[in-house]
Image 1: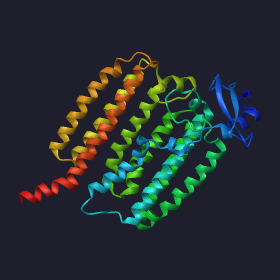
Image 2 (image 1 turned 90 degrees about the vertical axis):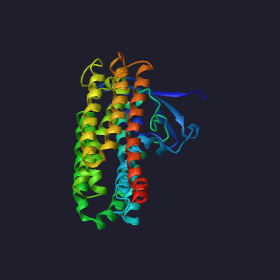
Image 3 (image 1 turned 120 degrees about the horizontal axis):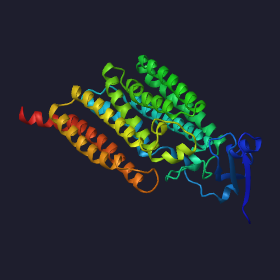
Image 4 (image 1 turned 120 degrees about the vertical axis):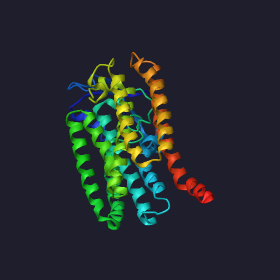
Length: 354
């Protein structure tokens, strides 16, 4: 059977039905050509295929990569290992907290992907993402329904931590406010910088205070929020061409690509300074000095290839981004090694020599 194609203009009822998946219960409209993305006269050609012809996958795997899971679970690990000998979370509290965080992350990521798909950015970027919507695994209206379900259950699971420590309500209220502001400003102004700042504050200081409502949690949250902000800018850097084509604004695309590497390096350097200050106050001087030396050396090796990059096209930018991701994971690995040493190894050493 020959393929069926339909071309529709943005703003028409036909376009809205095709892009959201409301046009049929037995067929899916997959965007195969996108013209003038981001403009008022955007035009998209859809291939109409039967649902049974789509190689279905568990769609939610596409929303939760290892980097994004670390956004919410590493702070839980950090505070658990930091207070290993004096646990601050009871078992039901910890379990509900983790489930609530994973569901809230899934809800936020679904909402972000819907926005990216509707705006056109997700439809034109070339990196190897799961692209749940573009491949027809789910439709927009199905994901809108899933978003509401995951958001509801994340709120229900959040009730248990609130019962244990009601002061967490401050973190919850600020989080809801930041999500509203970041999403509304990010959509209406097509400005990802607003959204990035909101997400970094939510997953940084707000999340840290939610896990452990103490003042020193905010210091860790500040450093962690900066690292998340860097990870988001690294993704924008990799997708520079697609985002500029889609009319998306963010910190990286504010200037020409000639200046984009310097902006990304400035974000990483600022994050490293904040991390160094926070860790200096809470870490052993020997470990702090050793980990900072490793990070600084790796950072300047990465900087050489980053600053030398001349074009957002080709395989070189993928190599630079891969090195940036390795730097990100090395950063976390050193943090994990220190926490494990302090919680599990150091007590045995002190007991042996005492």
